[in-house]
Image 1 (cartoon, helix red, strand yellow):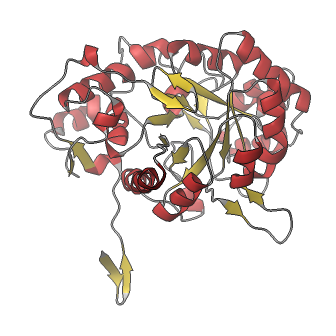
Image 2: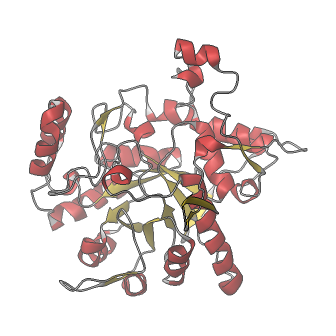
Image 3: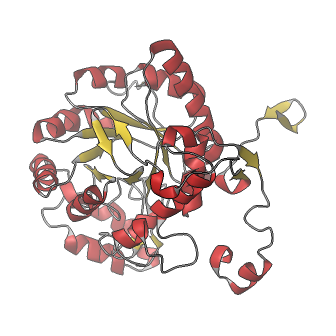
Length: 385
């Protein structure tokens, strides 16, 4: 514990750039590494979750990511369920000038969510061979959750900037995740959370997975707009500690998904070493040719009618989903061939499984991104980009 002033203590927290993984004394062939993880009765071959953002996941992208072994989350309150054909809206968002984006976002997201489109999108993903995973905010989960379950969704993610077991309001009915998980016919995942106490309550509420991270996303501005957040490495470790206590009490293991802050393959390895079972990725997958964002990326809170907590960022298009996940990498900055990067890191750390990777040795190393990289930084190549 440190002090930020007389009598006011503050805990130091750490992000991915401030830590490093230590090679093990015994290594593993990357080809022998098992990257699978499980939610409810579903096993996914890759610990990669595509963010529930309109710039990342639509029906074709969800199907493609499912076929590659990952999980893709479709936002049930996004453009895909507001417009029968959202392509024109996506074109407008991509073509808008920077000073027009906020108003345009608020305009196009004002159109109501349509129940028939919710059911249609889930059916389209399922019929295309994908795993229909969908998200809703706490305010809408009570209505959209049962609708999604009836339509054939496999998993429901209840997601907001910060989520707690019970949201209280004097102006409406409170949402109880405990009641929602008990009454919904499909597993309910929840996010986002960054503290031990809140995580323990959410595990006890029966969530099938817990998403960790407040504000580390590339397009998110919550940390500056609201002043809230915990550096991602520490947040994952704290939630993993709550998970360990919950497992000790109940014998039930609940997967953790690190949501946000993933810029390169090494960040995925660090997130899992901190205790995550998978990572949710937005901006890296928004660069795919299959992504609906047309080379742009924005978050779920960006179109908020009164207080946007995100922005539209240009990410460009760097390759296909397969290129980004499996290579061959055509970039030297670590943003492609994420799966091989993770496999290699796990092999170096002596981990054959994700659970074993969670035991890898971690050191505090704030000089890691810049040590010896003077030429890369000067020439803006590799790690110096």
